[in-house]
Image (cartoon, rainbow, N blue to C red; front, side, top):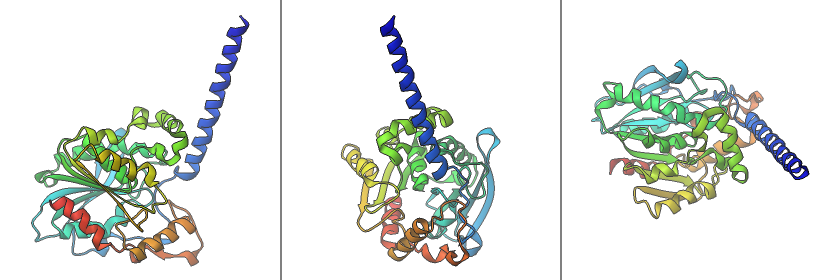
Length: 323
């Protein structure tokens, strides 16, 4: 009887410890991510009206629980369309910060659809409790593209950055129509943000999104015919290359459909030129302007001026799509 009681006490103690650890992790996530991604009132972001040369169509995609996701379709009139390109943004701003890239994609013959993820930009949703929620919405986005008369005419490619890179590499899981995917500084599972307690992070997210919390994008690479291209800066301070790019590079040794490049002297936004990257690191790091943080007016930033595209990196991306 006594040994049995000891076992019960030990199990009870372990469960209490597990509960406390999950509460601690949840607290960290609440402080870091649990807010809408609407940017900052102290930043001027790019806007579609800045690009009158583009033909733009706006609408909403119906996702789970009648959630509406805002989207824009961009194209350059007079240019022959090569493919439809789904663009997925990272955490913090909605898709407008990628407009300089979108403009270039359009000029190179791509019909671009970009949507604001859950709880971001012009889309509905409360707090971004977990980035794994992207896996819940992307099937609805892909189904919308398939049903849209214009978007469905062409081969389907995907591009994503950071959180969007994670969603982008998951996309072939939901559609065999996807031919090529580029992930910039993406992660394969949200556990990489705290790799020492990765399982606990996944367990915490399981109570929010279910089994998707445990999904690993490296499984997609192994089971898709889509060509996949992963790029990351070696100096990325947001996603540790040890637990992203280098892991993907090892996977690429056995799976020729995956191409990986780690770019020297580049950070989390390697598609921006060096001057823009340096200023963005300062804005996002020193001033903490991720997702609705209020800062003094003397830190007022015109984000458009520090979002200049790195032509060399862009050429790598467009060459992959054009191959």
